[in-house]
Image (cartoon, rainbow, N blue to C red; front, side, top):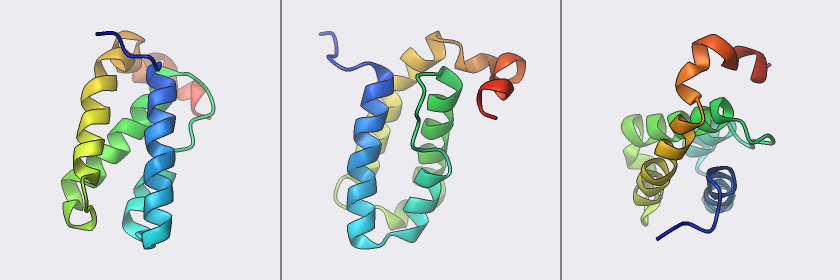
Length: 102
């Protein structure tokens, strides 16, 4: 079944939801990880990969700061979009991505 949102829009939609939840809860740790890579203003695979990596690091190193399905939301986002992002060339960060993130 095809998804209705592009990886770019899906990442931004989930990050907006997480941002709202974490602001209401004043979850500073989660917000620091999110805000280090988001918002993503351009549909570029390196930028999207950076968000997914940051959320994955949050999930790995600060799982105790996540509640009520937030870890599952992050897992689902990474699982569903990571393949699409890597197809677009996020793996070539070392070669071409540095210019895109400056």
